[in-house]
Image 1 (cartoon, rainbow, N blue to C red):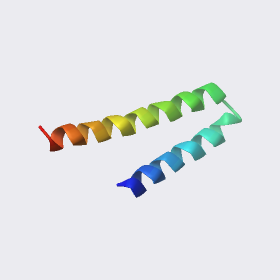
Image 2: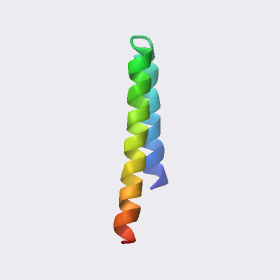
Image 3: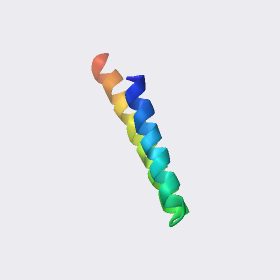
Image 4: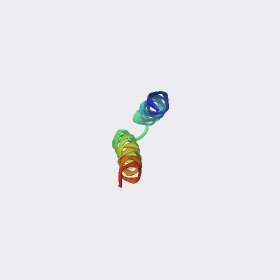
Length: 51
């Protein structure tokens, strides 16, 4: 679980660093959106696990 989250976060950071040269604001928005998706997935799993 933690390894999966770390890999996702690392991928988002690399993507943001690559996009910073071209579009800083767009890459930052994408990074925040990806983080929110990860949090929603975790919350959804907890809600489904404990109804």
